Image 1 (spheres, helix red, strand yellow):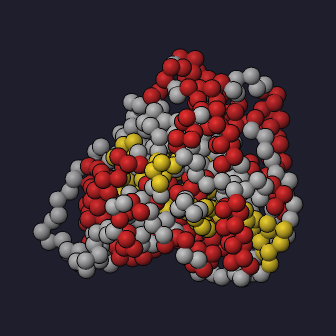
Image 2 (tube, rainbow, N blue to C red):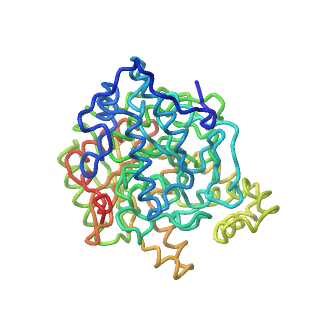
Image 3 (cartoon, helix red, strand yellow):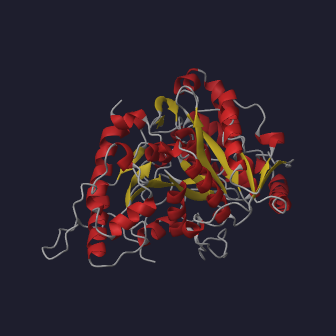
Length: 496
């Protein structure tokens, strides 16, 4: 698989004998509805040369320049290499070498995913000058698919939190209301997608760090099955729980990106050699035969009233789409010992050498795992495997579980910064419904299902069995198409 060092890429000039891209007044990103084309549609327009990858990339870069000061979504913008990749994609498409629906599509990466020759900081002063020599496997696959990589996105420092307030680069802000958090730890990725700064992004998820910010920012985020997408070249938080996955505007967009990055990586010990389905084609199948479980005993407790109302309305829609919907009891694992221990194991030597380079809250969380014994870690890993076996029993009677992604909408940044003691409890609550899914290791997607009266997004989480990404995406797509939540756009897109 070819991986290009972006610093070695030289801007290409258009050759005089190239076939020009057609100008149908849709060759650049437009405000409003034109901004959010499905990647399936966009890929086809690029293949037909109705849209130019260079114009598409230039417009994304212009939007980043305009809106990133308000959102703080990007740490590093790779403008030169992105334009070089776009020119190369344009040449290849002109010559009939169309690689995939991502060919020429501008995407971005959470800044803990290694990029050769481009710094990867994990939003920490400790790594502010860290420049990897190799691309992460997921980056290689995106490049192989022909995607254009715009830059590296802000996050909660070392992915150890759910707000993206704790960052060497400053707090990430929500595209729907910049006074509120974007969630975390993939906050920069989710808010950038919501604001149209990129057509999709790659995030990581150890306890909800793809789904929670996707829910709070009104976009779609998928955590695949553990081992479905390689984590090689991604700075870890807790390897037993870490996942890599896509964030995008629609379910079909997420399916297109997942198609490109899923699959076995022989160099990743946690990668599974399991066949990859055709996720995009699967969206066309109706979910009429699917059985849905509603686990009220844990996931529906202590909900914000507006979240509760939106999810009940979503359930009423799902009743018209699926064969059966029933309430059921699920044993939910909640222990976080393994997360604390594995996070401490990665950082112990770094903390010993340079504690002052960590944000104080990150340092406190890392040190919280210092006294966990090796015996306790072994026992928790055994329990992890047992939990992953036990959840299979639940999916013998249902095909999907449905619950709120987060129990509450996005808190304000001021609320959490004025009272630092509130930050951790709020993050724990925000991630309450997503953490168990990482322990189970099963796939789950967050899809928009409503908005609060204040205009903040609400997310619905659809959880499936191991290797059940196709079914999860099928149900999410059917729900999305039966509603209009994905058609809403942040006010800032119209300059307000």
